[in-house]
Length: 578
View (tube, rainbow, N blue to C red):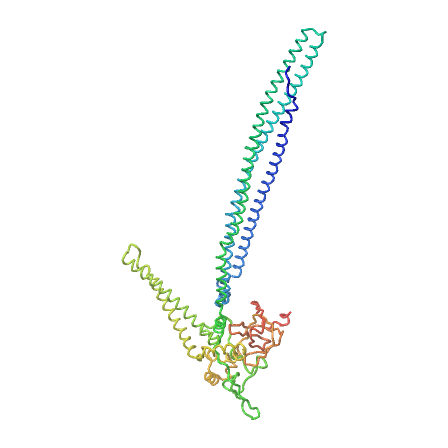
C-alpha cells in the first residue's frame, strides 16, 4: 500500500497569494487615482496661468487705450497747450504708461511660452508615461492571476486523484477480505487501485511543479516587477511635483524680470513731475496774454459849478468828442460812438494785425517774419540744389538738359524776391510796434498783466486809443494828436453810415457787469443778449441788446451760444431765450 498526503495540507500552502493579489490590485487602483489627481492639479495650474496672461494682456490693452485717449491730437489747440511744464509732465506720464503697458505684455508672453506651453506639452508626455506604467502593472497583475488559476486547477486535480486512489484502495481491501469473491475480481480490484495510485502520484508531481513555478513567479512579481513599476510611478510623480514647483518659481521670476523696467517708468514719471515749474508756467501765461497797454492815469476832477466846457484829462478813460457834439446811440452809459471797437470785422483780420493789443501784435508780426524767413530759406535751398543740378548737366550733358531747369530757377528767384518784400513789410510794422511799446521791466510787466486781468475796463479804455494809430500802440501824445486831428462830427458821421454787424449767436450773462467805460455795455446776471463779434484773443466779446445798445463785455462774464446761421439782427430775443 502507498500512503498519500491529504490534499487539505497542500491547500493551506497556496491560499495566501489570492489575498496578496487583491491587495496589490487595490494599491494599483489607489495609485491610479492619486496620479490622475496630480495631473488634474497640473492642468488646473496651467489654466490659472493662462487666465493670468489674459488678464495681463487685457490690462496692457486698457492702459494703452487710456494713454492714447489722452494724447494730444495733432494740429489741434490741445497740442499748443503742451508747451507748459505741467502738461508736458502729463504727456511724459502718458508715454511712460504706454511703456508700462508693454511690460505687462512681456509678462503675458513669457508666462505663455515658459509656463503654459511647456506644462501643456509636459502634461501630454506625463499622461502617456502614466498610461504605460499602469499598463505594465495590469499586465503583471493578470499574469500572476493566470499562474494562480493554473495552480488552483492543478491542486484540484491532485485532490480528486487522491480521493479516487483512496476509494480504489478501500475497494481492493474489501474485495481481498471477502472469501466469496473470485481471485480474478480481487486481481482486477488490485490493478485498479494501483492505477489510481499512479494517477495520484502523477497529479502530485504536476501540482508540485506548478506550485514551484507559481512561487517563483509570485516572488518575481512582488519583489521585482511590481516594485519596479511602483518605482517608475513614484519617479514620475516626483518629477511632476518638481516641475510644478519650478513653474511656480518661473511665475515669480517673470514678474521679477520686468520690475526694474517698471521702476524706470515710474522714475521717469517722478522726474517729469519734479520738472513742473509753476513760475515758468505762470510767466508763459503772462507772455501769451499781456497786451502792452499802460494802466490809465488818474481821472481829473470836473467842476460843474462853473459854466465852462467839460474837459477831460488826456489820460482819462473817456475821449473828447469836440464841441460837445455827441448823441449817444449805443447804450445810455456810452458818451459817444464805440471808439475802439467800431471797425467792421466781417472777414479775416487786417494784415498788419492792428486789431490786436500791442504786445500780441508784436508777437504775431514776429511769428510772421520768422515764418517768411523759413520760407525764404526753403526756396534758397531749392535754388541751390537746382543750380548744382544745372552745373552737373553742363559738365555731363548726357545726364540731362541744363536749360530745362532755367524756368524753375527763374520762378524760385521771383518767389524769393516776393518773400523778401513781404519780410521787409512785416519788419517795418514790427519795428514801428517795438519803437512805440514802452520799455518796462519784467516785474512791471507781470504787475501789468495782473492789473489787466483784474481791471478789464482799464484795458478797454486803453484799447480805445489804439484805434487811432496804425500799429495799435498807445501813447498819451498820440491820443492828443488824434483828438485834435479828427473832429467829432466827422467821426460820428462816418459811423452813422455804417451798417450794424449781423448777429452770430446769443449769450447769457453769468454775472452782473457795470460797463462804465467807453465802448462797454452794462449787463445784468441772467440777461440774454446777441453776440455780434467773438473774442479775438483780448478777453472781450462784443454784444448787442437792441439796435441802439451794443458794446463789449468780458468774455468770462458771459456764456456764448454761437449760431453760424443767425443772420437776422432784428430777431426777437424772447424767442432765442425760449
